[in-house]
Figure 1 (cartoon, one colour):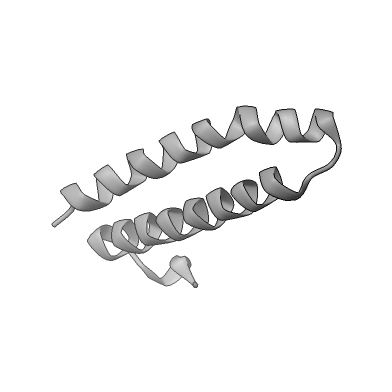
Figure 2 (figure 1 turned 180 degrees about the vertical axis):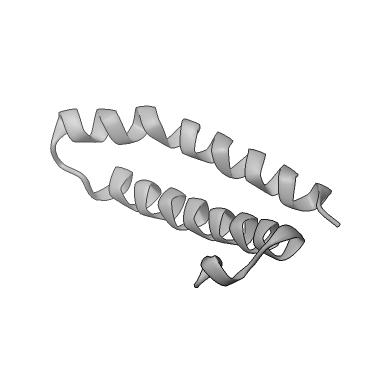
Length: 68
């Protein structure tokens, strides 16, 4: 997505859409990793970090729903 050609509300919408998509993909990756990771330290990191990423996704979805 080339955001350099966007401005104003078009930029805002494109940015928020990208953040929603990226956070969804990251949540899916971490959830999948949590199920498959064998290394205990890495699994602990994933399990500790996943709620934060989900919180970020929730926040960006709230922003998106408040946009006109």
